[in-house]
Amino acid sequence: MLIDNHNRQINYLRLAVTDRCNLRCNYCMPSEGIDFVKNDKLLSIKELMQISQVLVDQGIDKIRITGGEPFVRKDLMVLLRELSKMKGLNDISVTTNATLIGPHIDELKELGIKNINVSLDSINRETFERITRRKQFDTVHNNLIRLITEGFNVRINFIVLDGQNEQDILPILEVMKHYNVSIRFLEEMPFNGGSKNFATIKWNHKAILDHISKQYSDFEKLVSPATSTSVNYKIKGHKGTFGIIPSFSRTFCGSCNRLRVTATGDVITCLYGKPKTNLRDIVRTHSPEENIKDAILEAVGSRAKTGFEAQNEHATTIFDSSMTSIGG
Image (tube, rainbow, N blue to C red):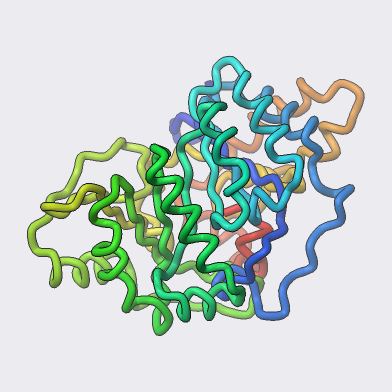
């Protein structure tokens, strides 16, 4: 069992398999893009498996596969097949932009991987294309509906961007009210490679909820797990639910159970913190398992108490990275 220096149990790993993405969302990276890392700097499938096994042996029982866009990696399903066999790993989930998932939906179902988060920041074609800088709206929409209708546990992640998509908050709730899907509205964060920085945001969790309550007054707050990052609600007459994630306000730090490993092996104990160690060189040694274990224990043992404390570790450079390189 992994217990950090603030007595929080760590049982959830967000494992990035690539820093590449086929979209160019303007809140994730600058318009000119980023310098993606060379393939030899990325963890191989075998290395990702080795690291996952050590972490599962240490008490991780949930792994979420992230990117970049995970399905950009052509050997992703090899990893998922192997993870699905791992004893002690109870939950495998994927966060995706849903552009490339279509050919893999049947096998994902066969493997029992049914928890899928779809990043979708607009249900309007023009707005979607302006945010993503790509014309993939129909593909995303079709794959999303297929995932929902085929029984996957789908959560839509909608980052509220001031001046860009706030007009879609209410329409996406209305469009999705007939589906058993959770729509989660996230506060914006300035991780887009250094071309954006801000100290406050207009659309914080309180503003988002207030906006929704003006249209839907009859909703109830749901009981959520202590480790949930979202505060969740159900609107009367809607089949699904909605939640709000205070990702910028960081009100959930006290119960954080997450650890991140980037596609290059950086161990990040807080999204706002500096990497604590790197596992790539360790896993490429002759006998890496014990050294990986020790590196993880050291990283978890020096965790910041809150995202604000973690941000102070590198306050002047914290937002120089893009979200696609951090691992979401």
